[in-house]
Length: 331
Image (cartoon, rainbow, N blue to C red; front, side):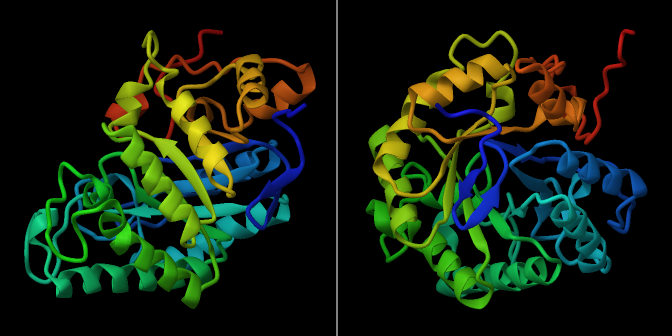
């Protein structure tokens, strides 16, 4: 029987649980993207309290991206220094940590808001080179791996989307060609850094094409997959009647690939998570907002043998781009 707190493997990484903590916004840094003491304290609470793998808050690839004001930034002068301390905190407590990196708007080579179909080969090579530079900084900062944001509404998710990508060259058309740009990024990152490459990927409108994308990623260097969907924070809201939509697809993926598969979002009850883990081939569950409410809640779950997050799934932290909960405790 699988339990949330099993000691197991996440690719080549030893982990002490099946809950993956996914970050999002960073509101506790300054205008120069220097991390405050509160950020270090938050990561220490995560690392000490039974998280299987920590995934950082979003790290923007580019300084003037859509959400860069609310995230960390890969080219911030203090990035390596600050995150060396963060990764040391995680490793001192035996917890692997991945850096989450991505971009939404494509503004490179003097061009603005480029659509997928307008990318030249030079543009593609620039993006790929930028990922390699970012991965090297992530390696120097001591991270165990990188999460490539190629799901939700990040730019590379649109590159793989058959409705967005109608190119007629080697980077468009059939499923493999639409994934080619990402595969080349994965290959370059692994060749230059050896980092674990975790891919957050969408369930698109075409489920069979989405399954093929996951298989291609798994067969070409990805070390793990997280299944999500477009605009997932809005999707995973309290009262939604269709939150189980991803479960069946994630289970299909898990049965079809030989790397770990993570189900993203919408779960906050220990008993429900345990039941899901044991009724599917899914081995890991990702959570974000419950950790905004309380970075240490998993320890209480482990002590009690049951539990439910106090997060109200109000999405205020998402809409207001905050890394702290905005609801005051009632007691």
